[in-house]
Image (cartoon, rainbow, N blue to C red; front, side, top):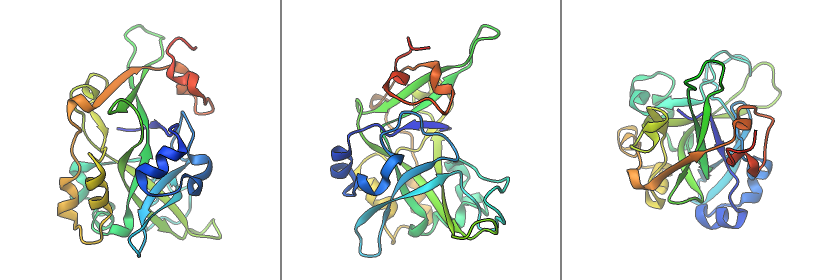
Length: 231
């Protein structure tokens, strides 16, 4: 699964990596503790084929939601269930609903062995650090309690690879490279082919390290969250 992630990479590197402007995503970048129900940055393919950034609330509201507080707001979508779900299948088949969710790391927790201890967080990175993209799905819907339509997003998950499986049996679906990211966004890609892009990364590409337990609280931010010695 993916319940917290980081977007602390350099804006200039973001611009080069995604051919999009970090400035479009504002305060959703530069963060060490991105949590559900917060605004996150995503990258979409515009009608002219160019990539652009926008923000979306993390936790997808289904098309049948009546209010922004609907009970069903999943932050993750299992890659192996996408074609079976009345929620995910219609979104997966349309490029307008497929997005990149830029990140430079994510957290997972190991349950503490000693009674009373808090779970231990681990920060996962790809290719030694730097920007990468989760496969995401967005939906924009009009609900009764908001004046304007709201855009929300979910992050797709897949089976954990070797390193990630030491902490959790699932991991976010990280698209494996630039070609795969552009393919995910392409309007000619159908649902069946999109599923083929949802695969665990090769073991050697993922590394993980202990993080501070301060990351357990969504209000905490800052580079010190990556230091396990900080309590």
